[in-house]
Length: 289
Image (cartoon, rainbow, N blue to C red; front, side, top):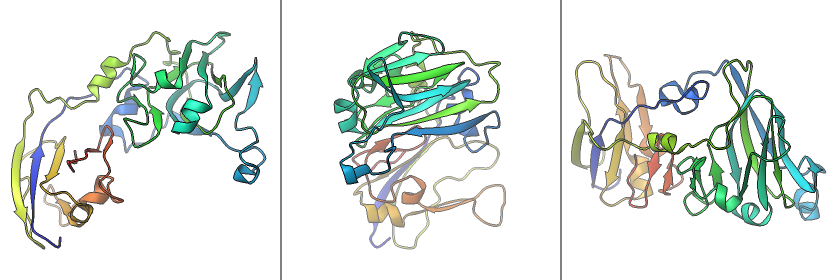
């Protein structure tokens, strides 16, 4: 660090997540680094079938095929779980119309919403932070609500599509997978993704750091789990966050298990841009959680 800066640190606990199988692994951070041997992740994305893109003004079809006057953008057989739907702002409001989701053998859509409704964060099946629009995110529209399907999932737009992106898991077995009920309510799940601040336990520290100096943020003997770190600079700047090193060492090891600039560790390497996610978030005041 090139200048002396004052930082406030806090270490708190948070609520555990509980999800019904086989969705339990999707939002369990304790298992996020473990391989999912029972499924394979696939991508479905808009692309120019003629490979011309801007050279012909994006005039070619960016969808799979037409059906009943609508445009099929996703058509995959199960057993599977749709876990991500992303679409840029212009495409969401100009090139989708109504978004229709057909599950298994249904001939009428189980879910029929406009892009504004689906990404508003207010729909019971797509509540914030599982879904958000361009005003709540960094500029795009996303939905992470898991949508399981046992036989097949088809998604159609009523307007000629622009750009879009889907991620889904195809499971190797459908023994425990049930197709989503369109009346499902994920609001309780969304609330479980928020930090439980009713009874936090931990430590709070405020320190002024000089260049090249260390501060013991957390020292403890015995077992335990750090579930939350909060960094709040008094005068935030990208340079300060990028030059602050976080060092973590436990169980009498010879070398630190964590040795990283805070910016790289927390996803702010390109600048202090506010964003929200389950494991990491940052606000406009420079607070990083």
